[in-house]
Image (spheres, rainbow, N blue to C red):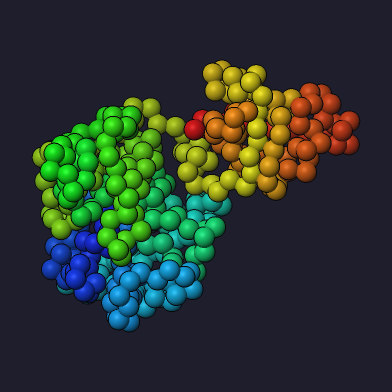
Length: 367
């Protein structure tokens, strides 16, 4: 089976900083690089930002839209232009592509999640490069990834990728922002995200983008937990991807974790959108966090939010700190009745036989 490479490129690497117009020379280099990867028998998925920025340039807007309806309209304008550019350039090299637009809801619903994976795998099987973007035209806050860094990491997890390349406006990660701190030290390799606790991580990058270095590090955390080697590197030099795959120490490389959680548990952790919170007593926290046990109704002290059976919820200790996430076997209305009660009392309280556990350990993942 071919190795799968996911490449995410940001708006700052696709557009000219002064005008917001397409940086055609850089896009052409990116397309040539990805086509070369295909010729070397890699399966390639491109996660591309840029629709909103390009739409702004076409409409003469001087700043990123601040309202959701204007952003959706501008994205609709820019997405067509972006895809036409990609299609023309890939076609000149004989490489077919496909547009794939996703929302958070496609990852939250298990059936949609599996369907997306099946479609992407079939596209790769027939030699197509999927070009993926968040569907900004229809997404609203509850169904947004928030940034394409997160989308690319979740996509790399979903598809079982071997590599995730996050192309940005700096050549690698630094201990501080090199644009403002001349003493910033380059970080070449990260074996554990805890190594970055002392680094000064900046916020949003360019005025047209939605992500900064912090979002890229969070994305690297999601991907490496899924066993995906992740590299942050310069978007203006996409040809470096070929060199990195050959072993050259370019950019910042995040090592994959040795033992990744199961695909289902990774979906629970990163793909679902929690609908409520359960606050646990000390005994339940210890049983879950230290002994890998399921959650029983007796350990629930309080809850908040409205949810149904099989929805995702956040599990918190008494101080409100998140310790885990999981899929519940009872609705919030049912849990209000049985919380703090022993499992053998559930039938008499609810009037029917329910599950012995509130969240089974197979549907629970530690934070």
